[in-house]
Amino acid sequence: MNQIIQHAENLWTKGAGAEGTHPWRALGTFEKIRDGVWFASSFANLTLIDGGTELLVVDPGAKNNEERKFKQILDAFPDTPVSTIVYTHGHHDHCFGADRYKAHAKENKLIEPIIIGHRALNYRFDRYAKTTGYNEVINARQFLGGAAKISWEAEYVRPDLYVDNYKKIRVGNIEASITHSRGETDDSVWLHIPEYEALCTGDLFIWTTPNAGNPQKVQRYCGEWAAALEEMQTKSASVLLPGHGPPIIGKDRVEEALDSTRRYLESLETQTLQLMNLGASLDEVLAKVRPPEELSKKNFLRPVYDEPEFIVRNIWRLYGGWYDGQASNLKPPREESIAHEIVDLVTGGTKTLVERARTLSESGQWRLACKLADWAHHAAPGNTDIKLFRGQLYQARADQETSTMTIGIYNSVAREMGIEMKDQPTFSAQEKKANET
Image 1 (cartoon, helix red, strand yellow):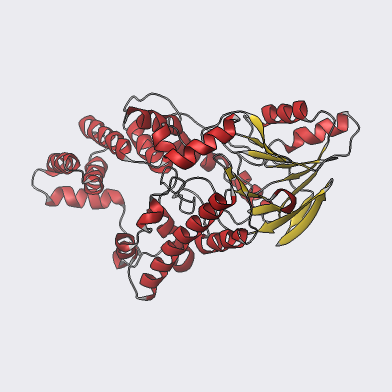
Image 2: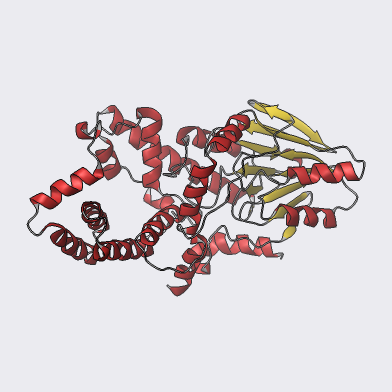
């Protein structure tokens, strides 16, 4: 059994926690999954479909692994050209490397591969060029806990051919369909290759709680995501090739993965909309909406990247805008103003807030503890003792969390407060924690 298939088996039967690994662990290998289907395991995966006389590459890679993947394909298929490249969506970890294939074709006087993607990719790439600095900040916060800056590209190889809703393509002897479905992004597509009973889902399946929340990124589409998964179920595929994490092999497992993820998303959206239609505030919605317990226990739906609470917030934003139903939040005071008012009202001021925050944290009441620590810091931003306490508090809270996004943001606050921490990717910190427990 090859490495990728073994990793897939372990994750399905034991789960990421039992293995002490993040489900997105990159093996760095390029291996045959079944006849006609190859898979490069990396942070964001590449799938290759062998059409006999031509090759189809799905998601060529990120800047830090595009060359490795290109060479792996060239070594395995030295005499078969890549004729088609599909971007499942425009995230950086999926859509770089296409220029390498085009350059190789030119150098060897071959037909250049056609790049295919959804039309909304152009809007995304234009937006990225406008927000380069912002994306450097938020991705460093999310993936490195603020330890270092992450460079953000502003130039992209855009598609030659666009998909609006649905398109069939032929690559050598193989036919594939490309379907647009909004989910994690507005430009996402997924592929079905009937001859190989294969689905390339992009990030519509990622071995974790779906990335339908993400507090630092643009709108996600929970209900449409669920509908896309339901449509995938009709294809009766026996291999699912995801954007992150290893393949899922076997019709029963593919069906379970798609159906469980669909029901998870549908449940969150249905509950949220029911409460919104009753006039509930966002605060009330967040307190009441929970994913089904039996689905939350699935090895492929654990909140190790995104979280259901964040998904609920995104559903609210999609259907209800940014107003949360609390009148004082329509035009709120600055946090510093609130902090000074609280400090003036409380006997003992910032000292009392810090001591109460300490007591709350010791009993696991992290939300209240951190809010009090925030107020103390905003009221006295130059107080080094308060900064140290706040940093230690968020560092400790991060250690209690499970998702990449939450851990990264809380560790970023700790660093901002001057806490010295080992510079390591958030995923590595999550794996270290899993191994220790």
